[in-house]
Length: 459
Image: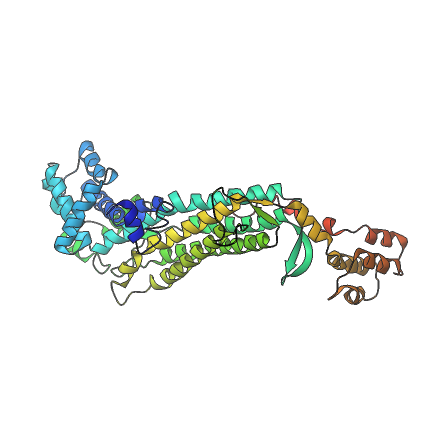
């Protein structure tokens, strides 16, 4: 089957239509990548055993031998993945397949004397939980966070360039106190920065303590070793946070926390996508048409906001998966069931849809430009938004029941600037106050919005 046909035959759009968009994640979430990370954990554990003076049956490796072992995962090839997969089909156990393959390779390298120390006293979950901790962390740091950082950078550009672009605000879908487009983009930027800080701040945990979390096999074979200290040191050597008290499985609490954090970031991006969609619909944002691209199969004039729609849809799928992971993964019957194992295999899909959604949103943000003339024209057509300012100033000077007076003038009707001027002319207030009220204009009634558009919050 050709590569093009493989894409057309794929049952997941991540492996088909959108394969190129999420290709960077293949190095972390594919079956071959999982094999590679398992090899990494097995090799590093073997080297760690050999370094311990109390683990006397495992001789120390010299520098060249250590380098050769580490090359097994650092230079992991397609042929290596296929060889492990062949072992998996033979024994029907993917972790044991890694062990058997590693033992073979050690024989080839002249390291057969060490092969009985491979997977010493471990349960498969010791290898798996550390492998998933590493690959999820690496995918987050190398792929997901940089993608979110690009959105932050684009929002910062819009916030600064449009800091002083006045715009009619809408609350409950109705005309409300004006803002600036830049300030609204900075709201999303500050929210996203806080969410991204949470995503990056989750310290993933790992465990290495045997079949039911008691170090039973370790202690039976080598009671002279402080296995609690050994385990904690090994997990920390992988830059994961050690957990000593577990059942057979690592409890996945920090992985659930990461899923929740990514979910919140995705929710911010959906909110942004929907607002941008509405701004395009209202004409506030213009989209640059792509040469040769079709907007509608029957209406030639259309430039649809497909990037924001695509982003919203994919981010929603990601949230659904992440929600399931954060609820499911921390739950396991008694000391172990395998339901978490099959769920973890879909972790890449959640990252994939998150990445794809972020990419589409970024593409959409890169195509839009602000139509400042239209913003100003629509704002000028809604002078009723000044009613808030007028009644607030009147409160300051002690005018009786100004809210009610403005309510009668403006609520539920198309108030004009002439209406407002006539209202002000009839007020029993000082001329200086009338002058202050008559100087109000919708496009200038934006408070501190321009200044707020430049503030960096979060992180």
